[in-house]
Image (cartoon, rainbow, N blue to C red; front, top):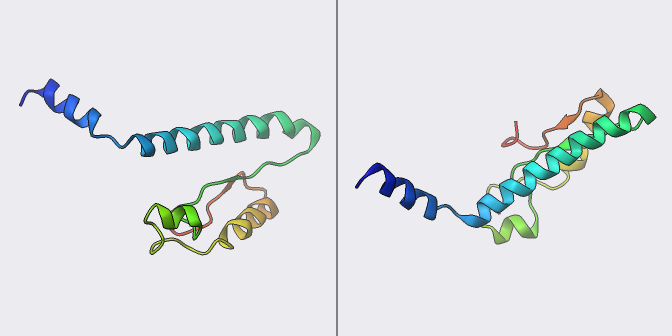
Amino acid sequence: MTWAQRLKQWVFNIDIEICAACGRKAAAYAITQALRDTLQAQGTRVVSAHSGPIATDMANSAGLGEMAEPAELVPQAIIAAFELGDFHAFPDTMAV
């Protein structure tokens, strides 16, 4: 198999849903950064939360239920980041 054939096979085997999810996360992060920069002048602080699998219906339907961590970790991490003045919150062990 040539290099071009391998590349074509790899490209067409990519899970489109995973690509779409990555794109949505990247867009959300970009918006969060823009909000931080825009709202900083008025004294508004923004926290960007980045979690791994969290115990939700969506995680269960994606087959991640066994590795998902409790949902209450997310607000706890956001509050902790806010209190420390951090921009990023990493709520679970996979996100670290």
